[in-house]
Structures are given as C-alpha cells and as structure tokens.
Length: 312
Image (tube, rainbow, N blue to C red; front, top):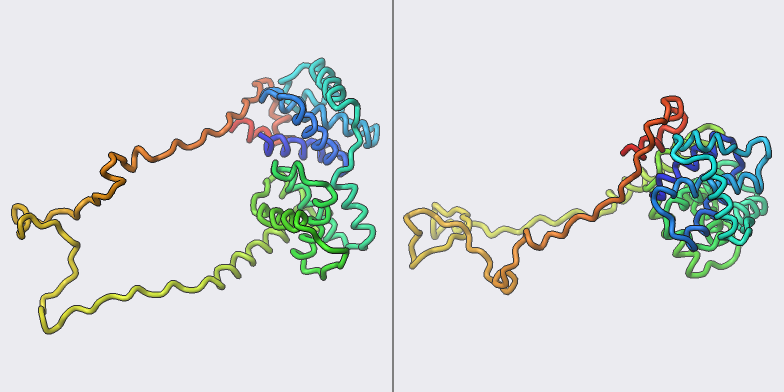
C-alpha cells in the first residue's frame, strides 16, 4: 500500500501548497514510526495524515498547515477528528518527540547551491528523489548518498558534464545503479506533478530519454544466426520430406496410422510429476480498503488518483 499512500500524500502536499521539505519530512516520520510500531492496514492512511500534519507544523508556513477538518474531508470521513489528534500524539511519543531529521532535500539543496546547477537539473534531481520514496529498498539509504546519486543521475539524463566532487565508494555506485533501474516504474500522480512548465517538464524529458535508451538497446542486440538445416538427399529418394518422428510398433505404424511422438521417459516424468502440479500459486495482492460511501463527488475530484486506487 506504500505507493497508494505516497500518491495521496503528494496530492495533499500539492493541494495545500506546502514546501518541498515538508513532503520528505512527512515520509521520514512515517517510515520511522512504522519501523517501531505495527500499523494495521486500516490505519495506514491515518498515520500518513498525522505525519504530514506534524511535518507541516514543524517547518511550513502557519497559514498553510492543514486543519483536522480538512484532513478528515480528504479521507472521506473514514476517521473521526479525535482519531487524528490521538494518532498525532502517538506518533510524537513513539519518536520521543524528535521531529527534525536530516532528509535528502537538505543535502540536495547544499549540493545544488555549491555547483550552481540550472533549474532543469534541479527539478530532475528532485524528481528522482521523489521516485525513490515509492520504493522500500531506499528507506535505509543515507540521505547524503541518495542526494549525490540523484544529482549525478540527473546530470547524465540531461547530458550535462560530470562534476568532480570526490571519489565514489561502492555504496554510492550501487545506489546510482539501483536508481537508474527504477526510472521506468513511475507513478502517474508524480509524473503529472513534474509535467508542469514550472517544473521544467522533466517527467516528459525523462520519458523521452528512456525511449531513446530502449531504441539504442534494440539496435545493439546482435541478430540471431539462422538455423542450419540438412538438405534432402537428391540421389537416394526423390520423394524425401521432413516428417515428425513417430513411434513405430514392431517396425510398422499402429493400425496403419502415424502415432504421436513418444513422451519423454526421464527421471522427472517417472516420478509422477506433471506440469500442472508444478505450477505455483500466484501471490495474492494486498486488498486495498474501500473508502466510505460518504465521500462526495467534489472530494473525489480533488484527489482522483488516490480514490481510484482505493476503489480498485
């Protein structure tokens, strides 16, 4: 359910026009809380809203901090207002009231200031950092490593020259490689966010880059060599044709009709195994909670992607 909750938080973050660092801090609070507590599926969205509320109170403008009534409306009245207050208090006590934390945006802002990157590189680096939020394998990655790898990958995508900012260790190289392998798994909500002109349309730029890389990969694949076939014997039999191997009974066909090919009789089939019995059951996907029927049409239009994912 992490991708669905991230879509919801990104839409809520854009709706309230909060600062970029508020989103990263909210996800950081969410991950730290979930690492210490067992969260039921029905309370996962409530924890995300409480994390966003705490992060907005901590570092954003006071007039843009969402109210509990607005959060309740966004959640289609699935939770009472008292539940938001209780969850906010529970998150703070679980984290020992340690809210501030060095997130990836802090290191990325420092790197962008030192290298004087243009806006397109900045937006591409932010875009890659938010893509990494969707994947659990990057939760334990150090924010400084994530910021450096995202900026280097953004320069490579946009064709900017490399910046010599010190030697790279093994962890940073692995992070850069892993990030490049997740660029084709992008949420439609996040892609739509970075498709706007004030974000330099970096989502469209990244999409075109991936298409070009796929075309280059197809051209570099060597062609498959043709199969060599044995020519028919012209002098031995003029009516020579290629036939499917048949099972012959005592030197003749059974009943005068060709029989089907013989079934392999190796150790595997002698043990009674069959293809049907070897098929593994497909893993079940988690059931997405269905929102309450009290959600109005106007609320669904404010956050279409989240409500569509929850209904599915």
